[in-house]
Amino acid sequence: MKDSKRTIIIIIIVATICILYLLIAMLLNNKDIMATVRPTYLVGGNDFVWKKENGKWKDINDFSEINNIKFNIYYNSSSKRNGYIGFDRTNIYTKEDKDKSYKKRNVMIAISNGSLTLPVYEVSDFVVGDNEFALSLLNNFYFNLNLFKGKEVNLDLDDNGVEDTLYLVSNLDENNTNGGVSKLFIVENNEVKQVLIDTGVYWYELKSIVDLDDDGKYEIILKKMVKTGEGAYDKCYELYSLVNGKYKAVKKCNI
Image 1: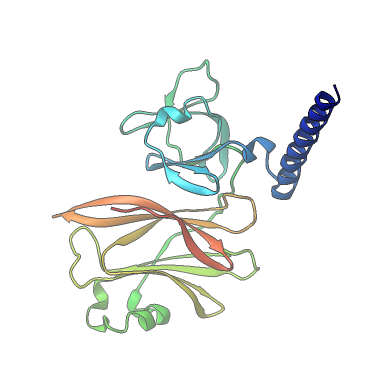
Image 2: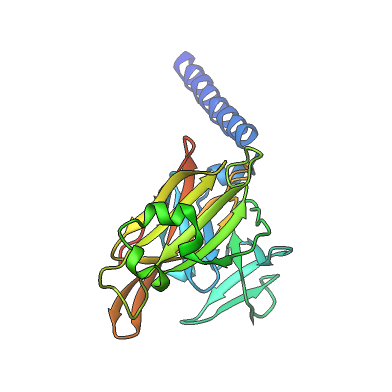
């Protein structure tokens, strides 16, 4: 009898510790308690579906995995609704309730287990040959700077109160992969803070800038491309997060 009571006491103590752990995790991360025990799914429009489990992001290919999961669905930076997501081979569909029918919609991004923040920003063109930072990083390409395309975004990426400028520079595309280069770098306080991408094989486009974990610091989602034939290319998507003050690829892809 004593052994039976002792076993019950041990079970109660273990269960109490587990409950306390979940409550502390919820308070520290300011998230719904179920987010600590369920995977998080991220849907990037028609482009990708990712799953975060045990702290790591990965692709999922079986879309039925998310059929009965409720999402916060963002149709643009200011329009958000709760609902469900469905796919066919090329289109994305949403519905607000399980009993309703799916409708084809243009979804910007969607997340399960909580919400996200979409900042308002503009992607602008700039002349690479007129940019001192681009010139300093492309000093071996002075002879053909007119072939480079430049994109920039101004935004406080790391929530330190100082505006950053993210630059994308490349002379690679689906028609040119010979002797090319792609660079993505971040400038703060008139200095290059980090060169995030530096490659002669792939070229990149900005898919999205988003705060996925409500910490005020933004993640960067990039579209990665490589030429596969004349005027043709393959693509995949990568996620970069701030780790100890520097952006690091936390979800890479291979093509």
